Amino acid sequence: MDMVTLYGSSMGGFGALMIAASLPGARAVAEVPQLDLLQYPDPEALADVERLALAGTSLRNIEDKHPERVNVLARFRHSGRIPPFTLITNRADSAHSEALDFLASVNSIAPTMSSVGPTSVHQTPRPEGHAVQPSPVMIQTLKAMSQLPCEVVDVRLPSTDEPQTNAVPHWDLREAAGWKKRSLTQTVTWIESPGNGKLDLEFEIRNDGAESAKGIVLCLVPAHPDTAAMNQAGFQFSSYRGIGYFKYVRIPSGTSLVRQSVSLFGDCEIMGFGLAAWDLESPKVTNLKSSYRSPTAYSATLGE
Image (cartoon, rainbow, N blue to C red; front, side, top):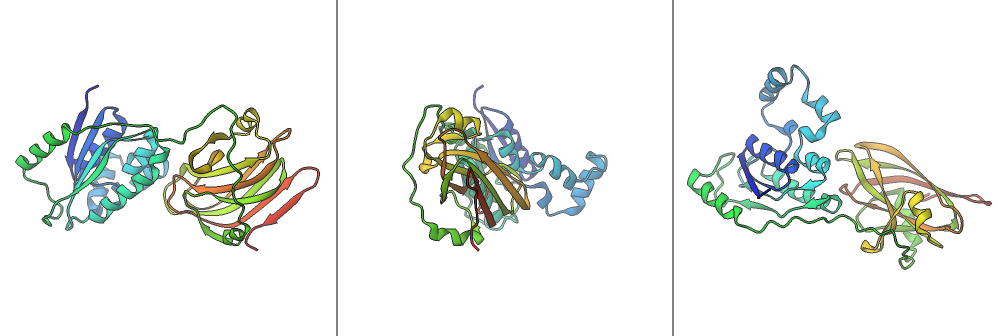
């Protein structure tokens, strides 16, 4: 398909972004767009939508079951792709700060997407508010944007089936105290283990965003890595940022208790593990407990 440019303003901008996320080969130009229906500033209009278009079903119920139907960022996550898009905004628009935050959120989820196109925000110099540009201006703008290069790439973590190893991380156990209450970043914080074959983890995590299937990354350092054994345990290998063997951990929205159990066989002893944020923005972890089971059991509660 040749590149299709979808344009809309306000709710039309919302529609352009939502359709582009599900239509390979499309780019969106969204002028002062809505990005989350539940944040629409006119509650009476939302009530009309629920009454006239949704047969009384609340948008909140739809968000709970299908957030990708009411939220642009959730649609990007659901489709696994970030389409090429440009947001047009100005300082006086009621959703100006939301547009800037949206672009930051898009950047944070980009490494987990199957394809990512170029994205940008165009801020007009005049504070028009929630208003559209004159038609001649937008026609020129759309024509110009349709000529821009629009490379779409896959930026997911690379993985391989070949046996590989990373250098053993520097175990800084002084970091352990921080696990009593810690915000995860995309840099892995490593915790040394006594080298047993079974690891049980339990921790509480606070996620202020939507549920994510790739919320955080659990990383392992095996003493004698065997690709087949690691794959059987659900781990892939990536050399990205020294992650090594990793798997994604689904994180619900809000505060939840997460339990992970890993069993390795043969000589695949666990020298250490690490956690990092991936699809979430600085989720907060508290009360991390770990235990290692082999002929001699060992357990620890980090941060106590």
